[in-house]
Image (cartoon, rainbow, N blue to C red; front, side, top):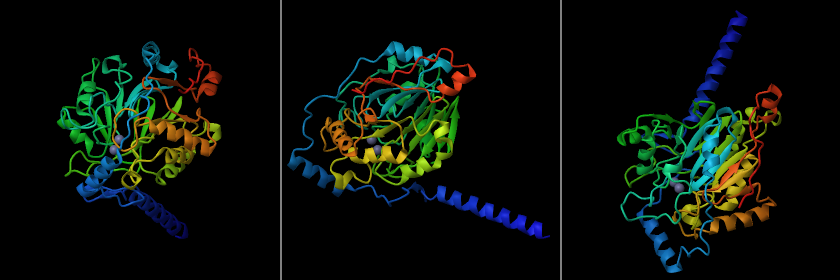
Length: 384
Ligand code: ZN
Ligand code: ZN
């Protein structure tokens, strides 16, 4: 009897714990919309928008760039050979511009927040215009296994780009999207999609894709704000652990993310994220942007909170969205690094079209098991 009541108490305790963990995981769900974990975010209205634009006009912002974003000829031969290498793939990322990044890991080719269009805008011929061509054109891409979308702002979810990708020769990639966007994709004629909530995961081949919370918002018009979810991603494969911040303000979400995954990122398991892709642009003026976009100094703190081994700044240099000039983010990042005593190798940027090759985190394990075969020796590329 005593044993039975103890067991019952234990079951009740476990159930309550599971229920409260579930409630905690759903705290960002509101009636028909979503909210951030650490602030009650309200998208700024038209009056604030006009105040920002008026002040920017009076102050002459954004100032023109002193130099255009560095652009490198993509190493298409490497990218395509690597795309077909299967288990011998070398983990690599290629920055296509803005947040658009090709990630090669776990034998797969993943594309994050693809935009190849001339404008990040719903309007033909109006809205933020691309300052640089994409580092890889749609035609130069290898076969894409999965497309990851962080949220529905026009600079991250581009109708023409996702439609083109769905028509790739060997069949549509799988689209992984936050809650609310599967229906949007269906309206675009795209059915091969998986919708996730924060902390939910989906396996694509050897890559486990986990959706992570960040502090941002969503909306493609004035009437659909916060109605679909926004997110970052943590990707886990034996050869690489990669993090992508999406768009985000600074919040404790990054410490939460590190804590969530610490069981699988111990020192004897290869440590923390091998690479974090962190947004470093679209942050001025701070009174308007601080809640939704980190500046480079905050991005350095995000890198530290995640305990990433290395980070690359993305979400800059392509579309002029805010008051800082297009070439300011890497300069501000250099200053933030100097103040933090951090090397450029630890947190730098790539030229558009540039590829960073990374060491495999499992190379010791696979070498010991004799299956490392044709894994190319890692040659960390210098950051330019
Ligand atoms: Zn956004
Ligand atoms: Zn953005």
